Image (cartoon, rainbow, N blue to C red; front, side, top):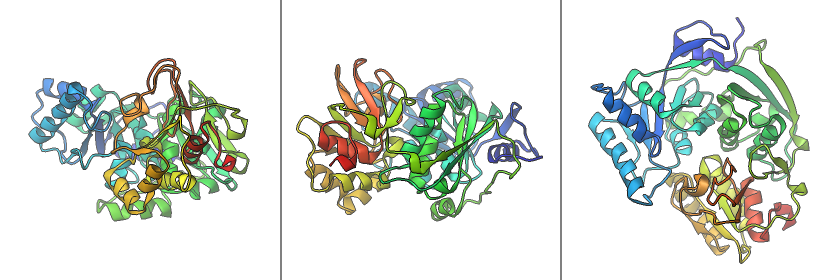
Length: 419
């Protein structure tokens, strides 16, 4: 029976030869993840179950990243709950401040996600790990509590949609632009409970960073997961990071898909998603004059070293507009150190920006960059819902790091070419 990569991974973890879309299966998991917002709820439920131990202390990751460094007593208490739970049950992968990074950048960097894995996380952007050829999906805290007890997940096998990207990208076009363009095409519910499988020569030409950006935002189209078959680029990324064995899967040539779409990336400009949905994407050349108050470069979508390099390339030798605040957030401590070693942080500071420690920060309206009434921000984050980054009357425009950096200099949303 022909199978997609998603179906093969789920079948292997369900102890089956094959599975079909719509089937309910119980699959063994390779990693369960939770953060400082979602973990305390799962921990409370776990403790109520009176289970003597977690299913595997090396297959659970607890990453405080949303409100750290702790912004108030409540956020400090949330992390304290995680810390005590990790100590009580001997959980290996609790990331204390100093080791902590934004979870969906940190786990791949630490070699905790490999091709063929099944990963569940109490965060919707867990789908990021599909860039490495894993089936990864977000769950609620109750389901994560069950996963920590049983080591299993119960789910419906999703239908797959095949998205093929051909051609050569224009200047300044990144994975962020490809996924924004795609969401603009299919809508925020266009992939509802489906596995978005990204293929084609243009995908193969992307860095791991850009691939993770695309799978990260699969949830913004309503998808259950996003996934890419592991090629040499992916294997070269994971092998130095882990000694754990893994199995790579690839879709059969005659596998069945719920739908297929083909995109010519040579026709795609840098994209900007207008408020208040990621599907409101339009080419940067059609943005018009949109003044901004803030630019944010970071998040689990675009806080990797490649993103910071692009932003620094645009900002070097330039100064941001006087009325604009620029916030740069390296996603992990190692990215922070690498950016420091490469002189990128000095570029950001010289331009008039500030550099934050690794944190989700303003992405979800947490802290360190909250917008006031009527303020506008251009951000490399993944969501621009009403009130997402602050006041209900504020506005968030999604863009790639080059556009965000150029906009900070221009004082309005614009392309690097406008400089």
